[in-house]
Each structure stands twice: as structure tokens, then as C-alpha cells.
Length: 169
Image (cartoon, rainbow, N blue to C red; front, side, top):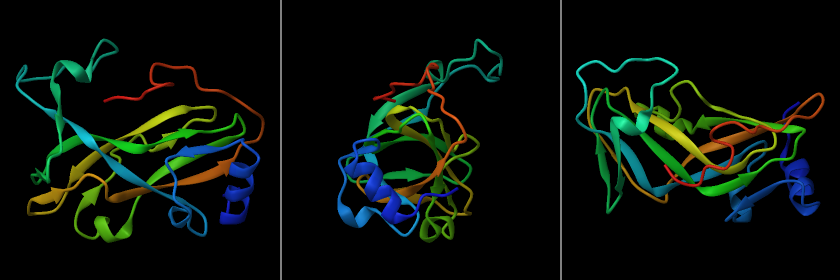
């Protein structure tokens, strides 16, 4: 079941859910808006063909770059962004990162395929941002670029994988 504003506020007050920093107006009827931080990871030179195997490491073909002013995302380009907010979910709540319609209508995709936020995470969230528009998009740090929709899990689990405590790109 999707958590609504009153349940989200109750979970925060009880200390089970934490989002830092958080302003009260970020919490909508059934989601929480999240801001883009001031660093992104962009593709850079590397092999002509990237081997998609279990050994693949995105860090070997990307570099971290600060957003000073704006970053122009070209049509067809994908970058990694990071949420300014750090999330801590309890073991019985998971989430889904979703774009905001105002930016989707301009051609900005917020997550390519990995929008799921596992229960028990305690980290900033990585956004795989892609431009599917026919023209460049200027991306700005500090914009409420996405939202997280929270849902109650049947049972409990805690994600302990490679990105469980991610705080940097």
C-alpha cells in the first residue's frame, strides 16, 4: 500500500523514517519531493564498446563534475545525479523514485531502469537522468527534480548490497 502524507508524517515523528534535510512542503499527498545535489557523474572517454558484464564498473567510464550554474544535458545523454536528501527507510517500507511531470513533459527522465529503493536503506539516492527530448536541457542543482513514493512491505528486509550506504557518486 502507498503511504499518504499523514502516514509519512507519523513515520517521521516516530523516528522510523528519516529524510534529511526536509522541509514540510516537500511532502505531498502521497510522495516526497527530492532535490538534485550539486554533483553529477558524466560519461567521459573510454573504450568504444563498454562490456556489460558482472565486472562492469560505471566509474571507469565516468567522472564526477560539480554543477556550477547549470549542466547542459544533450539529447540522448545520460548522467548520474544524486539527491541532496539522505533517506533512511525502516525494514518494512520501500520506495520508488519517480520523475516529476513538469520535467518529464520537457523530455527529462529521472531514472532509466533502477527506480526501486529497497527497505532499510540509509543513503542518498542516485538518479540516472536522461534527455529524451530533441533539444538540450539545462539541469540545475537544488531543483526538486524527482519524488519518492513509499509503500509498506509485507514482511521486513534490509538491503545490504553494494550501494546500501551510498553518500557520493
